[in-house]
Length: 374
Length: 149
Image 1 (spheres, each protein chain N blue to C red):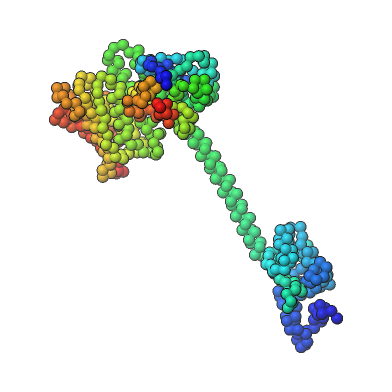
Image 2 (image 1 turned 135 degrees about the vertical axis):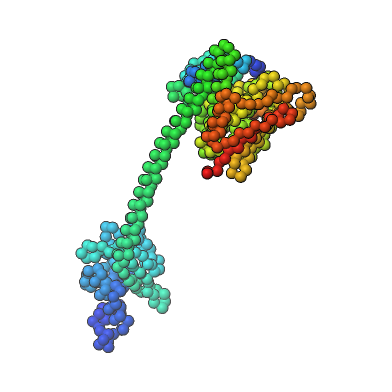
């Protein structure tokens, strides 16, 4: 008798009866499904399948013996997994893999397959041993979680795309409104300038020019805001220097220098226009006299101190100009619209404006903005 | 290099005709000449090629859906030596290299700011480098500095 038929022989034996191999008896009766195949025969057929394997697959022993295991595969079995098993068999290595198999009744189950070669003393492969474990529950949970995760991810992607679209639409709208505001401000400036050219008497010219300067100041505020890194903050130091340089350059009749010592001095964007107009009134008032002669200098400083933004503007004689002959600056006392704009906007923005007359005719204004929320 | 002498001949490309008129008048007040005004790319393309402007002031958003960048390309093709300055409410739309143009004046501009920018331009074009400091109203591109060479 071929010793390969030993397995069939032991089939009839019972350990309890004291006959046969106790290991073979254990394999036959364990709850772990097991088979043995013979790679020396054509197509590596099953030569042994225990009871647990028959219960798992629904096939009887006589339907199993002599067949290759591939009949357990079905339509949803992953060909790549099948390929990996085939490679392991060809290479004579062991493999542990989850594969979708089918029972005799056509239902499927997830099989945690463990397959390993059994070698003789010479190292030649005699058999393949395989154990199977039904892990359908575990795989189902895994795949359900994977499906759920994929669903959530799809949903998140969709909502992010929706948000992005709506943000884009808002940005476009904001951009359009911003563009119109800037264009309208440019237009207002242009209309005032055109009107100014038509003005005949000097009183009208002065009025229109004062108006023009205020519109220009607002335009400068707006430009500073949108050109800064942070549109919610407004740096009054750099704005004041910009405005002073605009104002002095428009005065070809006098020589005014600007010196700046600027620390970071930001106020909230909501107060920018009001404070911008205050600064414009101060600067315009300072350089208004036309006949002060000699070189002059603006000293502009800004800083933050104890939660308050401080802006210093000093207008005086330029030390470079050695001649002492030019007259001292007139006394300053803003009145009329200038005074109203300064006092009202200062009250509105919790800003204090104080004027100090220096000995040599210089004038110094300190603007303090209380930016702390009370 | 053959540098232009003042008064400069300036092309104004702007689709808001009130603003265009205002810019023309400020140019003339500053002692320069307005060579022509145009509101669109088409209008620029229709100008006679023989008359070359020294400077072109170009708005970004123009009539008939055309843009300042297109006009810039057209000008650089027709008149390679012309200094192009964008005058726009959207300075952020200008590419980092200014597409080869020479600077930008941001809208809304103040009278003094515009005049100062014109003066700086005149110095940079006719007798570079400019003696005035770069005014806050004007941002020069790398190409403008290179032009002083």
